[in-house]
Amino acid sequence: MRDSEKEIVRSLPLFSSMCDDNLDAMLAGSFLQRFPTTVILFSESDLTDFLHVLVEGQVELFASTNNREGTMTLIKPIATFVLASALVDGAYQLSARTLEASQILMIPAENVRKAMREDPDFAQKAVLELAACYHGVVRAYKNIKLRTAVERLANYLLVQNRRQNTKGAITLPVEKRTLASMLGMTPENLSRAFSTLKPYGVAVEGAKIRLEKLDDLETLAKPSEFIDSH
Image (cartoon, rainbow, N blue to C red; front, side, top):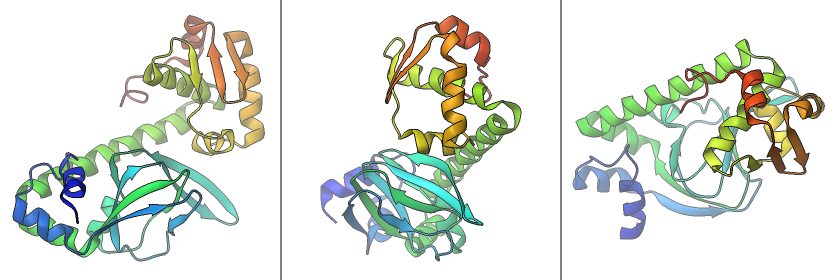
């Protein structure tokens, strides 16, 4: 690997405290690869060969069964994904595909497990990252179980408004079909939910969304720090 690529790895909290020798050993056999959009990186039935680090682009983690498919989460740079599967030496629990042209660093899972045994700082950071992932899963589960479809969409829009900091004029970061799956809806239900939010100041023009009555939208959504804070 090039030194610049090693610096990408070192910039991530998971690897920031590793000693140089252990980092070099873990990265042995790793490679940085570019993928076009809509490429399946792995399927949930495959054995976990690599820990993935998304350097550029966007990746969707999804699951499927009985001819149904659901988006579980979206990965944005710079971030690792499938750490848990890499550590347990089992099958991927989710499938992954690129949503746009992406650059991904692939670290052999066997090297990651060895680093977990031999580098205490890495082991501690790995536990913290897994704990953060667990909290994310709990937030997503509470969002699905405790809110109606309209409330889920309303809170999603409010979260995007905070992240994009555009004062009520946001751009959906994913296609509406993917958004519907993320929020546990069909595309038809998502369309109806947007219609329901019109009286609350939500105006839709393709991927552009205007939030013209933020106070009314927040009254409906009832944001929760235990679900919507990251």
